[in-house]
Amino acid sequence: MATRPRQERDVRSRDVQDGRHHRPRASQGGSRVSRAFVVDRRIRFSDCDPAGIVFYPQYFVMLNGLVEDWINELGVSYHGLVVDRRVGLPTVHLMADFKAVSRLGDRVRLRLEVVRLGRSSLTLAVSCTGQKPEDVRMTMAQVIVLTSLDTHRAIPIPADLRVAIEQFAFQGT
Image (cartoon, rainbow, N blue to C red):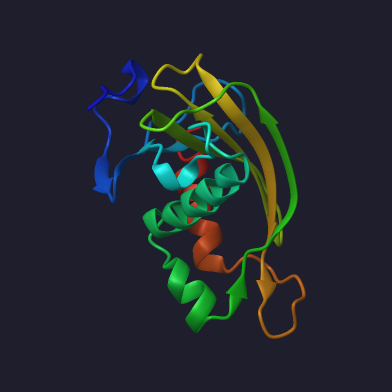
């Protein structure tokens, strides 16, 4: 198993499925710099095209899983939000840049940071790297709007989720 980067040592982590979740300390500097939610993951056969490299839409599937894992890690049940509380989290804007290929069997690091927390939306910065931060495979900017699954209209971010995001992303910054 690959070792965590120096800045991520001595922080809480736990195994999740085939990867490891890390909750690194908040970044230093800047007034509201988010700390990151990080998951190490192996590239699977189902992620790849016949050439053995990640088929680019699979990064969007990985992103969706990363957001679900992050919300659960915040202590707010993703299932509970969607099924019980009827809160949707659709992506309304997504920009992606693909920098290098990821191949079957590679271990990659998915990283999510909160860029902006609005009344009913949040903007995330997501990246996929090899085990070295400079080995960037893909970067994305994503805007999620919280909606009522009954009316399909934007709603304020539920208070418990807002508090959890603020405590996770900006605590100590």
